[in-house]
Length: 106
Image (cartoon, rainbow, N blue to C red; front, side, top):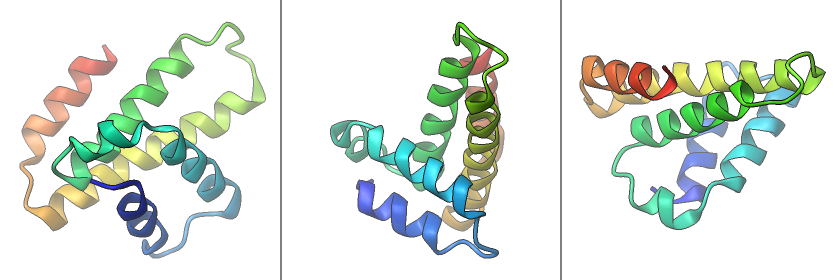
């Protein structure tokens, strides 16, 4: 999956994401290593990877009361939601995706 594909897929969602959330999600997509993205075969897995990486960073934050964490948690939730939407579009089985997500964030 290429970064441009992820960005375009997210931009095409309707209803559109609120501007601040869209901006933060785009920043997070831009921060992912392009080689890591290309190695992932589906949009569902790509979005799930971004979500779990973000949740790990939030969980490891030294300041759990930071206002920025609220936006990151909202972004993580959106990435997970979109991962399931992408799974439905791509015909990816959801149960294994859910199991993997739960194992990675536990």
